[in-house]
Amino acid sequence: MSLSKKIDFALLIQVNNANPNGDPLNGNRPRVDYDGHGEITDVCLKRKIRDRLVEQGQSVLIQCDEKKIDGMPSIRARAESSDFGVGVDVFNTKKTQPDEAIKIVCEKWFDVRTFGQVFAFKSIKKDEGTGVSLPIRGPVSIQSAFSLKPISITSTQITKSVSGEGDGKKKSSDTMGMKHRVDAATYLTFGAISSQLAEKTGFTDQDAKVLKDILPKMFEGDASSARPEGSMSISHVIWWEHDSKLGQYSSAKVHQTLRDHIEKELPLETSALNDSLLKALPNLEPEVLEGF
Image (cartoon, rainbow, N blue to C red; front, side, top):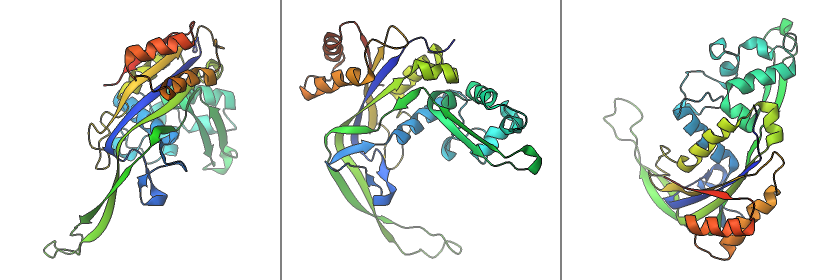
């Protein structure tokens, strides 16, 4: 049984002395828009969710190298491996119909039936057909997160010393580098789960619960030099479950109630959020979850 109701959600992210999402085209400085507001891309947020799913033992197609659990060298190798109950025949256009292939890969991988995926593989052998192109549109969409106010970025010059040649007795020349951080900021992002698209991928109410339970701890176990442990956290998850597949309100209207609350500079506390959002949309009660 696929998702039984439309769902909207929002995340409030706290950043303290961390680089939440560096821009490789700008010296890895924290991303900012033209108005000076900090940005965390939707791709970055999905990466955190996938990492938490892997840690919980969920089957995930797009695994990062640091948290890879199956030893597969590439996405194609993972997708075509019979060890994962899929196998190369799924991506053989002469043997498998596209709808059947989509059903198989969505049943296998949580992130595929959640976010979607485009499988575009060339055939390895001439007798395997012309390869495959399977576009799968997932029911869960997440926007990029933006800071509530323009951010202040602190840049620090560092010295890196590495003995990378010879027997290690001779010290190599020091090199200079830069580290950047956001001193303190609150970021906001929105998401939605479409029941119509959930029917296509088989995303269920249980899958939605798994996602809801993961969101408050998105940044747990994600420590690095740029993001020390505890420097990034989810302060609140706001979760709206509509009473039908179509929902009582559009996602735009639901999300705007939270923006209005923030623009009025009302307290970002659980009880205040719940009362304010319920008053704005009386027949759509939000569930406000505090982060870990």
